[in-house]
Image 1: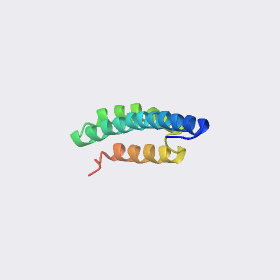
Image 2 (image 1 turned 60 degrees about the vertical axis):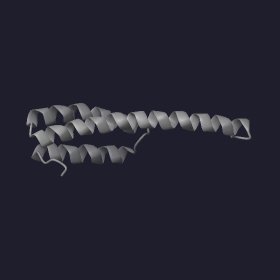
Image 3 (image 1 turned 135 degrees about the vertical axis):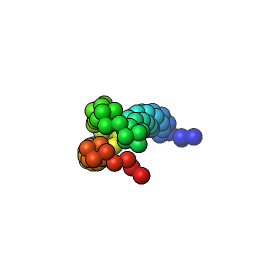
Image 4 (image 1 turned 135 degrees about the horizontal axis):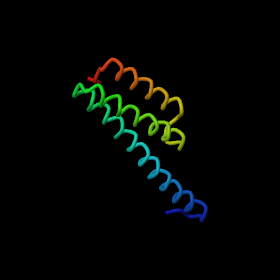
Length: 90
């Protein structure tokens, strides 16, 4: 329990930010999982469509501050490379 009013407010704010970040990251991971499923199934058109849907979600997560901008670029680059070669993760 916070002893100061400002500390209590910081606690409330950090909880809300944590929930917001979790929600954004979860949406991003779900979009990436759809790409993975399409790659495992071997469906090239589904993988490309899922990639086109996931790219804005990844960049939006970065613009909200949940992940770093370079982290988003790295994810998009690696996913694009895997979709173009149709290689699943494992």
